[in-house]
Length: 305
Image (cartoon, rainbow, N blue to C red; front, top):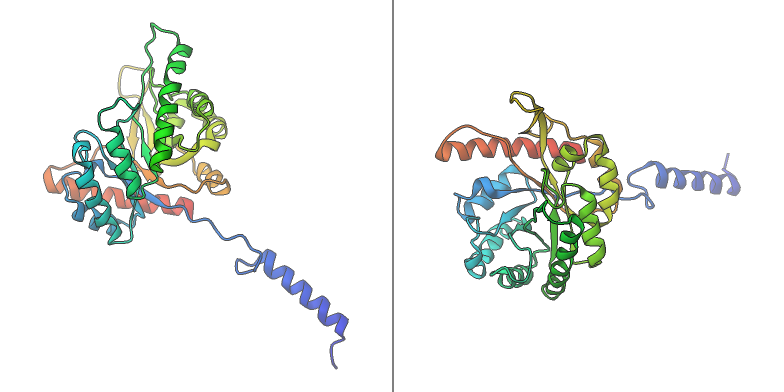
């Protein structure tokens, strides 16, 4: 018996709705967000740029955060020669240079313009800034007031170069940015797309404990990249407790953070930092780091998939 036209149309409409809502292949389904991950190469600086790119590719990263500072993987005075070499080595393997880590805090820093113009020409989107520390003999508010003009000047140069400066929150008694609300004050007063936050969930959890989510919600509008590292409290010392950095998954940071991140408008890179200890000397230590970094990447990928 032939289906009536009305029944056919009703059945087709229901099937289409079910496909769009219930199936990941539905034409109206929202595609899953794939966050890019990478790592800070501070512990790999004894490797050449080609060797670094090869190792990163094998570890399954999407790119790197590269130290471009005194004693870094790229020395600032050689940035025009060496940063393109690093970028070329990465791009040959379809990898990105997500962030350069610098000591830049103002236009008066000697290599600021050379570093930023070179990075901008290479299409690098972000640089991690240097940090400030509070002097408790002066007003905290006055010190924040003094930082704002420096950031505004940097924002103008950043706009020229097409690169964004991002300020990392640390933990500690005198860091500007340990309480994330002071970063919020700074970047909101500068009010530029070219200055933002490099949000460190490890340090945010050290400082915020159970309130890390409040701090995240406060600053999330300005987050351009995220630093991922884990820690636990150590009570081996005579003090109340010390931070002991550890491999991902062995410590205190919460997986819920990554769900919030995926559900937000964030589309920047996640860069793993490695503050914990590995054994060995020379090449053996490098190999041990590679194994540790690979494991951390596997854990992080499982959290964001």
